[in-house]
Image 1: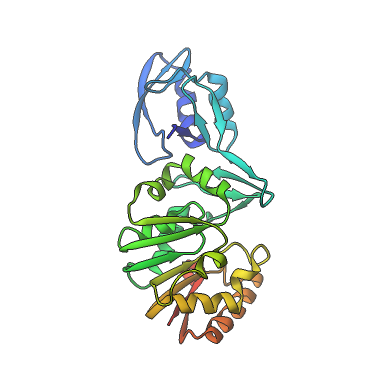
Image 2 (image 1 turned 90 degrees about the vertical axis):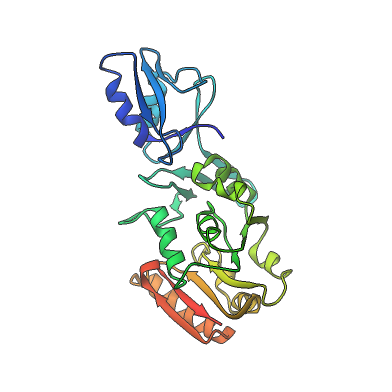
Amino acid sequence: MLPVLSHYQVKPLLSLLDGELPQTVECSLDLGISQTQVTLSADGLTLPGFQPIPRKELETIAAEENSVFEVFEDGEIQKVSTFSEELQRSYSLFPTLSAPTMLVSGITMHRIVNTDPHQDTLAKIKAFGGPPTGRVLDTTMGLGYTAIQAARTAASVLTIELDPAVVEICRANPWSQGLFEKDNIERKVGHAWDVIEELPDGSFSSITHDPPMFNMAGELYSLDFYKELYRLLGRKGRLFHYIGNPKSKSGAKVTRGTVRRLQEAGFKRVQAREGAFGVLAIK
């Protein structure tokens, strides 16, 4: 994959361009996962095997604090973003000091207030009460962080993504590469409901369900959908359902309705997991 940069990596380099040149420094080209030696000179920033990125382009990256940029071999840069003709939604990577999140038509996919996407993912996994094992279903892939984390302990993970445009964003995101590199992750593109209808009863030990907001995907909060999730779980199987801030007015309302429908679907225990902004339902 191509190197990617955000303002977090570039701003410190810009200040060095006014000092003694050339000089070799370390910079992350994968949004904080690793460090690489790069060269600063009057021509700008040179990455190993690449033409220099001119100062003007670096200043563009530094000014675009809500964007992540791919770097091409000729030193040109391009924002990591795309538009889905199918769903009429825009997608782009949004940088943080940790893993990036994704903007979906301007709305962040992960919690980023007093946390970051990586910690948000760890909270969702922790909500199961123990590392997921056996076969895990991830109903809504997004950037794939939950599937990747679950795959660390699970025998296998099936993750479903509605929009092929999101997969395109994942391929450019260093933090999503486990989706394509881990042998125990299977990806399917399609509507979650269509995919799970074809899956056999009791075939999963755990399910993580992190749907878009209720007003964007109400069918994924329906009683019929919850019945399908119940069917797919084995005995004592666990479902973590991310909902949103339970202390907000809208979050509290959606949580109440969600708990009621999960119980109607057959789940015996539905427990709040406020730290993960969701509920744990046990078959």
